[in-house]
Image (tube, rainbow, N blue to C red):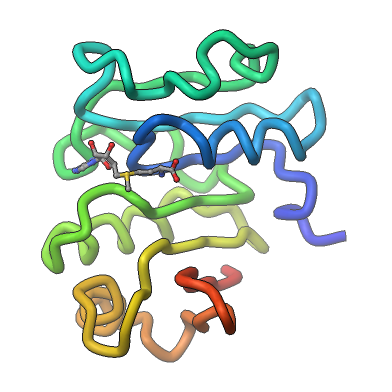
Length: 148
Ligand SMILES: C[S@@+](CC[C@H](N)C(=O)[O-])C[C@H]1O[C@@H](n2cnc3c(N)ncnc32)[C@H](O)[C@@H]1O
């Protein structure tokens, strides 16, 4: 079974209210460790609010900071599943896309959100970053995906 089907570790760039982190936490083994990063945590209570008072929160470590300056080195090569859903500005998604590949363990799955239309900045950024041939849009969704 590919490692991303039962990821040992998951990293999400852009926690938001935490609904995706909760979805992953609720559908992965009890041993899965989730990390989720947002510059609004902990000053903005909404960040992670969807999972905060749920049992799944025990699997989730909320990290504070911007993906443009955060030190990802301790997490490099360790993630079986990476979700890129932070800033949607072209230059930032380029940085986050490179970061996602650095975070990924061999055989990992990377997901990008908000591939909304052909010329959107997320799609442009994946192209600028040099991953256009590797990232496939999931039909009928706003997700792009790639296996490392
Ligand atoms: C669309 S929301 C994320 C939704 C969340 N991933 C989910 O599916 O539940 C985008 C989030 O990215 C955060 N964000 C913006 N720039 C960021 C950056 N440079 N690094 C990390 N997070 C960032 C925002 O604060 C916001 O909470």
